[in-house]
Every structure is written in structure tokens, then in C-alpha cells.
Amino acid sequence: MSEVEKIPELKQIIGAMLFAAREPVSMHQLRHVFEQTAEQYGGITKDFASVTDEMIVDAIKQLNEDLSRNAVGIQVREVANGYRLVNDPNCGLWLRVLLEKGKANRLSRPALETLAIIAYRQPVVRSEIESVRGVAVDQIIRNLLDLQLIRVVGRSDLPGRPWLFGTTQKFLEHFGIHSLNDLPGTDELRRLESEQMKRQNQQAQLAIDEASDDPSAQEKTESEDPESSEAEERASDQEECTAEEPEQSENKQLGSDDEYVEEEDDERDRSS
Image 1 (tube, rainbow, N blue to C red):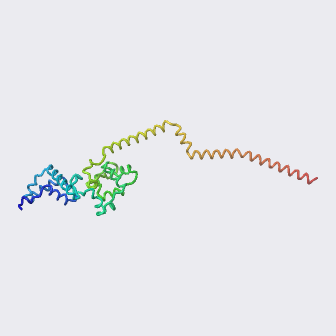
Image 2: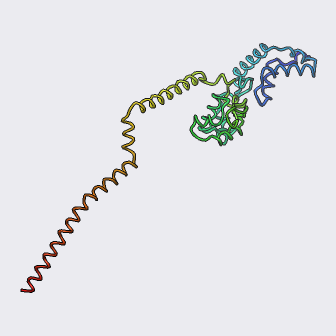
Image 3: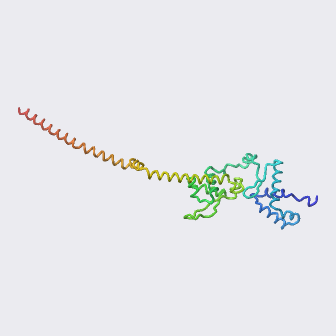
């Protein structure tokens, strides 16, 4: 067999590179490999030194068709601004058991919510994330940093210059998307968020206007004041005590006169 017959096809070379790579391989990296190989080894490798992007895309398409036709359980997908060999989604259950996925590194609901806020609002500071979620996110951010799903992208101009967070290449790989523009409903979410903020501001302003125009609200607040009610009760009790004092004094005086009269009668009876 001649040397020419042993030359692999372009789709074979690309397939081998994607199989060996641990991360998605970009179009630029693929072209660079072909150029560097031609310079280093020469010979038949020079035939692939001038491959174009269109040729690479066509070769990947052919490779995917071969993999699908032969049902080998893998396919080429474009993720994280590059190409990668991934498993057939229909085989995912068996791979999950084999690799024990979904146990230790499974993202909790709070972690997913925090990650979504960072993905849609990046670059974003911690205080903004907490204002949206309403809870502290220090530990969640540390976990996401450890998983390399987010990273520090800079510092904010806010007082104290807090860290700004954004997503990583691994985030794109983890969720199988090509770029952040492929996040579902980005424009729609931003529109809904803007409308919600507008409604909240209008409701807050309406509540302020109603409170300032309604004098009964202030009277109600004063009547419900526990201190004023307590003072009124004390004043009422004092008035009742004051009103009872003359009556008690009068009764006491009458009682003294009766006793005096009874004593005089007793002396008169003894003398007689």
C-alpha cells in the first residue's frame, strides 16, 4: 500500500483531535494545529496546511453523519466557542450511573438561582446578587468558584471596589451552549425585569401619594399608638379615683356622726 493511500481524511484527523482534547477545540486551534504540523513534519502533512474554515465545517458535518449512521453513541457538538465530542443524550442514564454523576457536584436550587443571576447580569457584584435573592450568597459564590463555573472578572467602581463576577468557559461546557448569546430568553427576561421594576416604582409612588393625601391615615395611626392609648387609660383611671374620693369622705363622716349619736344614747340609758 502506497504512502498516498495511508493519508487519513480531514474528518478523521479532526475526529482524532476532538477525541484526544479534554476541552472544546476552537476553529482557530484546529487551523493552528494543521499549520504547525506541516511546519514541523512536512511531507504529507503539508496537504492540510491550507485548510479553510469552510473545509473544517464540512468535515465535521461529514463526521457527525458517519457517527449518527453507525450509532456509535457519540457526536460532535459546538459548545463554548469550539467543537467537542459528546455522548448521545439517549445514553445519558447509563453514563450517569457509570460516572456517578449528579451526586457530590450536583448544583442545588439556590446555586442554580445564583448562577442564573450572574449569567444574565454579568459582570455583577455580590450585593446585587443578594438584593435579587434576598439572602446572603457568600458560601454559594465560593462553591461556584471552586467548581470553576464563575470567576472574578474585575472590580466595581462602587465604594470599597467590590469584586465583579462572571461566568467561565466551563459554564458554557457544563450547560452545552455555544456562547452567552444562546442563553434562553435573554432579551425577554430583560424586558420583563424592566417592566417589573417600572411597576414596583409606580406602586411605591402611588402609596406615597395616597398616604400624603389621606388625613384619616394619620388619625388612624395616632389612635393605634399604644403609648397614647396607655396615657388615656391612666388619665381616665385618675379621674375615676378623684370622683370617688368626696363620696368616700362623706360616707366616712356620716359614719362618725352615727357612732357619736349611738354613744350618747348608751350614756343616757346607763344614767337612768
